[in-house]
Length: 144
Length: 162
Picture 1 (cartoon, rainbow over the protein chains, first blue to last red):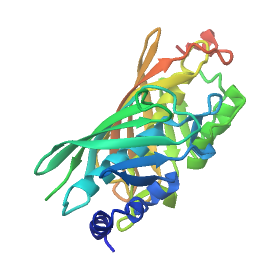
Picture 2: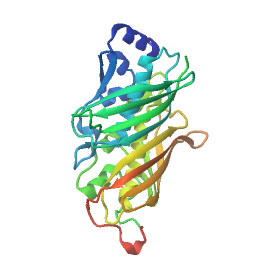
Picture 3: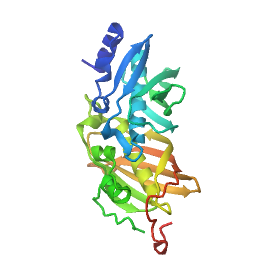
Picture 4: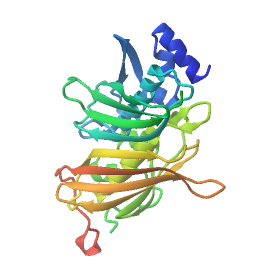
């Protein structure tokens, strides 16, 4: 099944699992997602091989960047009746607090959906949604 | 200049262990290798592995592995240029994806272009090699906070490292 067919099926059934598991990288990170009041809430597990700073046991900044890019892409696929898989143009991440060895949650929003390109932003947090560990925004090429 | 005694082929995690006393698990997981270390520049290689793929139909790599490569190269280089040696924490990182990266190794050259009392500014470019020579796959810029946690002796001033 193509990614777009998987996405269609996921929207119909409300089960995001097969969509999240499509990309090998997402499987490697151990990404999960659940649908809460029609919003996708993602989880990145706190796992030893994701550590970037062993003294603080903090998650690697590149993992956070990859995680947030994946979340933004999946949000786009989930939201749009896309004809093609969104292509990432650029991603900018602001690192706000150390992400420790515990699950990191993330939720994205499509800021602007254009005919050819869409802007998305995402926030990631651990224990406290009001104290995010990182925020990111990205631009993606999409066609409808 | 090379007070850290880095040789081409050393892994990032190995050098971190020599300096910090602990390796870096995610850098081990990625298998990051130092190809060249010549501050204010350094080159790091990300060997290909299946888990880095974003699109299983095309084998195109996910941006995440590239971001981790770039963040590591810039952060490690930044750390190595401080007197005394101390960790840095990424403040922000922007990655522009110029071409799809295929299922092959990726190289990254990082360059630190400004060090202030509190912040290190770096830029990077990432490429893959192939039949037609180097294909640039990403360009990046990042800023890194100097943490002020001294971890070891800095570079020998006589070597002009800073």
